[in-house]
Amino acid sequence: MRYYLRNPKTKVINPPSLLPSSLQNDTEVYGRVSKMCMLREGMREKLKAQSKTEDLSRIGAVISAIEGYLSELHWYISLYESKREMFRDSSRGVEFIWKSAIVSRLYDAVNLTRPRFGLRGGNAGDSDGGNSGGGSNGGNGGGAAAAGGAGGGSAASRILGGRSFKQRRTQSTSIYVELGFTLLSLAVAKSMNAYSKVSSLDTEIECETINAMTPGASMVLEDEGEQGVEALKRASIELREAAGVFQYIMDHVLPQISGIRLGVPDLTPDIQYMLQMLSLADSDRLSVRVWLRTDKNQRKTPNIPANLLLGIQERYLNASSLVRTLQSGEFRSVSSDIQNYMRDGQQLILAQAMIYLAQVQSDNQKYGNAVGFMRDAREILAGLKKRNQSVHARTAEMLLRGPIDPLYSLYRRNNDTIGFEAVPSSEDMRARLPSGRALISKAIPYSPASAAPSSSSVPSSSSVVGV
Image (cartoon, rainbow, N blue to C red; front, side, top):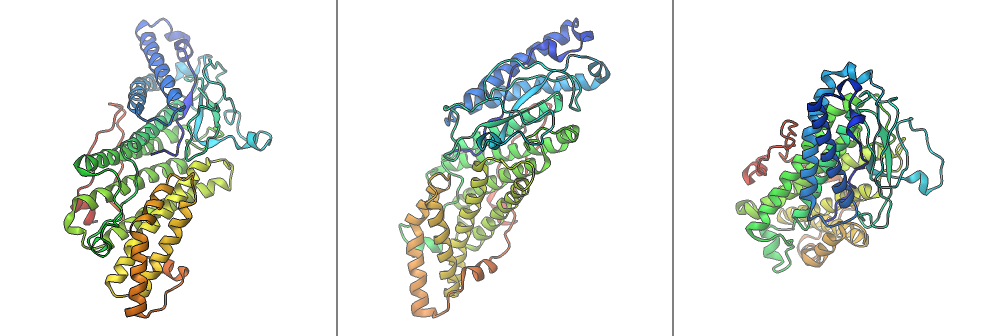
């Protein structure tokens, strides 16, 4: 399954640029910084290679490279903080240059002049590799920074959601900006790893009453059997670990760079919260699938998956509202891949919830409402099916080919012969949506000491139901 973010990318640095002259002759420190730079170069090459392919089979190596560099970067930041005055007095400041994971170069595409970004942001470089020296002006972190950015507007760049975009470049002399983008790279890579484990995040339509009424028309996705369930659990854990990295960035990195204008919104509270929310929402989607497959006793009632799915789509709505806020402000070029992913994902999850709600209404002999919910679900899915570039189009098509039409025909027939009820309008049906139930998926904390979050299992079936 395709992921909706790009890998952040960067350029090379060299050891002397990271040390003040007073530490240049300390062989132990210099040797460790050299090792750190070597690990960073390995990470940079893997990020660059991954950005040019949709194949996620080697994403584990990308994660290992990032974590290896992070372990040394955390050490370097401790050194910097313990000798801050020494670094501040140094004239060896260099620029860390990164390319945004979420922002395209809108201004270049529409031939507008460079907007009102600060001196440390918004540059547009597209070339890969190369050194980037620079002065020490700007940034909260003092002279502890330099980097070059492997960029990517080439034809070989990954296509996300069917479209490609050129990543906008930003730069800063702050070591905390370097830490923030490296952690962001880790979170993105972990999310990609989760996506590589499953064919789809989407919840199959599966409950006892629906299966009994429409034999042979249930919609179950490809990840079958015990191995499929384990893959869903591992992917859910990976997404929760990514959410933990986003939380660490919010708690420990953003306060250090609050005075820096980067020209891209990647390291802003709204974007980090949005990305964390999406990670947990996608983890919730996988947890619902695990529960549907493993908790046989609870399959008898469709109202539980309906309410859980409504809670998930509310998270998507909240994330979309954050992007709309950004779109009306300075960062009007947030990638359409992200916007489409949230909009289409929210609509698909809402349609799935409505399918279950229609069954709830039918079970309660409210036949007009059952027809109304299923009608609206069909209309949403038909619209998504036409969006060929959407990562959700395939699931919409599968649902339409599976239980939707047989159930819709059945509900209409029941209403025409038994219920004789008026079918409410779409507006009335939206007003009758119940509140969603939140799952207990929580971010797994990121631990800088080990550079790898500790894993815990997906919530058990009983705990999901007991929310």
